[in-house]
Image (cartoon, rainbow, N blue to C red):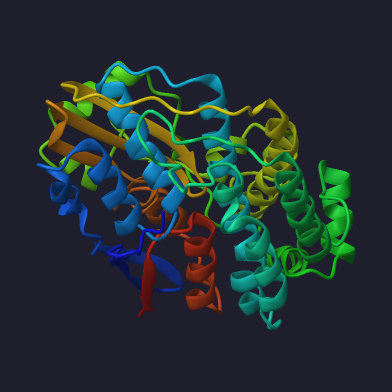
Length: 383
């Protein structure tokens, strides 16, 4: 089943002012169409999930599966374990594509290197349609589970191809796993990631962007559901938890990793967290693929109720909430990572304001924005 994308993500506009050598002011204009969730109202459950997968071309797997999960929770539906493993595998494949894509396509620009389009092409060939090796009918986002028929030889081959590209083009060998191997990789490595880390270190920017904003903690679903149920739009637009902005994404998930923790909370730690997660995701995929068995899926009945779908997507925690009445959507909400990470008083603001701008403020802002990784195009103006 092919679903043509509609791609309505929108954009962010950031205006930064420098005064007396320090970042003095930040304006964040969010042009993401946050009300787009209203387009699901009146849709049947399957139609709403399919529409979701069309609307969001970035992190499409995460968006579609969060939507399907929300529908299932609203209907009191328990997903078979094998379906859960298959969905986790799809999210991990998307995460590997996103993280490695940064190394091959975005980071080279920071270090005056050519983008690695051929390597990205090979990686996409292995992972972009990875779902078809699990769900040959393309119904990976069907509430209740699609027809799961894993092709183990193909899955194994694709994973080996992806691991080869990442090992060669991103790490040029084994991924650094502790401070000693990280320092050696930074000093001797020739990949764009190593060159970027070396540039950050030589410029004295390793700790830039550190702030008191805490990683988004695990949140009990009843508490999150209650917060969203009574929200009229302010929470999904500028979310806070325990009265404060939070940060989500690779750094939040791996802040406790020994390597990441040893590098602090600035640009270097965030770069390391993305690479640690990239390596870990590939290894987890190689273990997970053997836990998946065939499953025909279940018929999703016309249900009434409310449910949350919570997915750890490449850029952070993604939450979908739906209210159903006889199988049709009466209310739909989406809480995305970008609203956490680019909260007006969040990680970007606290990482910038008051800090020394140096002799390349534009580049410094671009580094921090790239580290926080919005899921939309971002226009940056530094005055």
